[in-house]
Length: 79
Image (cartoon, rainbow, N blue to C red; front, side, top):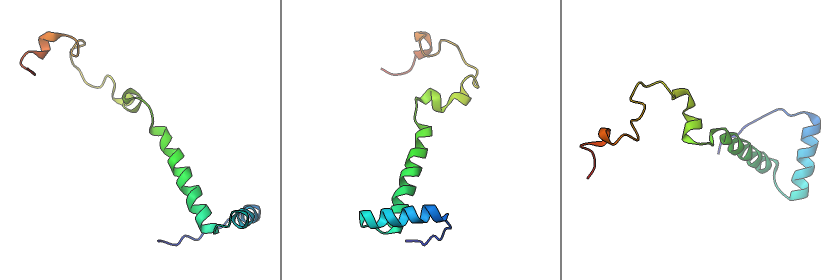
C-alpha cells in the first residue's frame, strides 16, 4: 500500500482524531473509506441512459431516418 501525506486544517484534524477514537479506527482507515466513497459518488455522473452518455454523438452520422424501422433495410440480415 502506498503512503500519502496531506495537510489538513486544525479543525478537520481534531474532528478526524475524535472520530477515529470514537469508532476505534485509524485515521488512515477513515481517510481511505472517505476517499472511496467520494470517488464512488463521483462515478454517478456517468449514470444514465445510453442516449445521455452519447448525447454529443447524436446527429453526427448521416443515415436514413427510418433505418431502424424500415424492413427494406433488413433484407439479407438475420434468418
